[in-house]
Image (cartoon, rainbow, N blue to C red; front, side):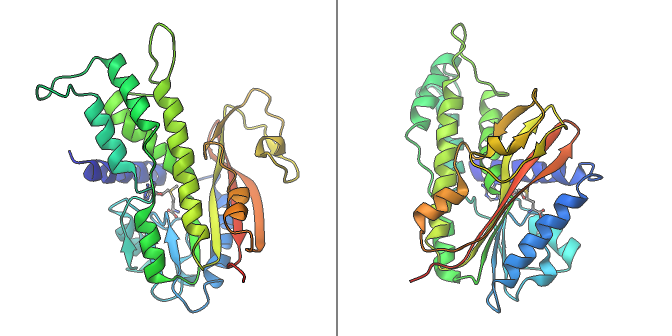
Length: 305
Ligand SMILES: C[S@@+](CC[C@H](N)C(=O)[O-])C[C@H]1O[C@@H](n2cnc3c(N)ncnc32)[C@H](O)[C@@H]1O
């Protein structure tokens, strides 16, 4: 199966899983995310906005979106889901937002095969080492996003809970080829692919932020900052950096960084120092029993000068 088709199938499956979850405890998260993104759509004025990670529209107040607002999501069913939910057939872009997933898929496929002899598998340890080495020099760039931003000149760009998903999707794609994570090499227990993947994800997140920072639009970004496994006793103290220091309680909880160590606010302020910080908030989203997401919302005004 070709990489793009595999990605679309994978995202369609993830979306079905997301929508099938029990949403009993999602009320607070959904009202906050919709209010935040609604303010982002208002900031677009009369110009169309661009909504990245628009998905099935569960979190998007499409009624507030200016005419011509474009959705962006590589799940092939996302536009139709949005039509069903919001009665809106929006212009849509289905490209991979990282610009690098097709290459990642191709790389994994090639590393697992011997260069000679069709279909012959390379020994697993050699395939894993080769993949880790090649992955370390793979640097995704969101070319389609860059082009669309220049073409559309949107009134505002909203990133609707997709930035923290880039790594999850990349990992799922590698799992298709390598089997479930972790990809440990015995007997020494190293996991060189995970290390290289973490760098790939950090690069993909930074590249996306650089491209967004270079646009002329205000930016309204919402994303998972972290996933907290195994404890519901965590609460949030005052907004502090690094984000781990804002968490209180939940001693035994396991923390997973959804952005591979990238600090969105710091990165954007570095890339576009003239933008005014309009909002910076965090809250906890009880996604499932034993799984809390630390959600972060950052809004920056247009570049000045
Ligand atoms: C958590 S969901 C967002 C939910 C959405 N905001 C809503 O209101 O339903 C993340 C979305 O990002 C999309 N996505 C993940 N990785 C992507 C990528 N590399 N390119 C484009 N879309 C991607 C998924 O298909 C999914 O719809």
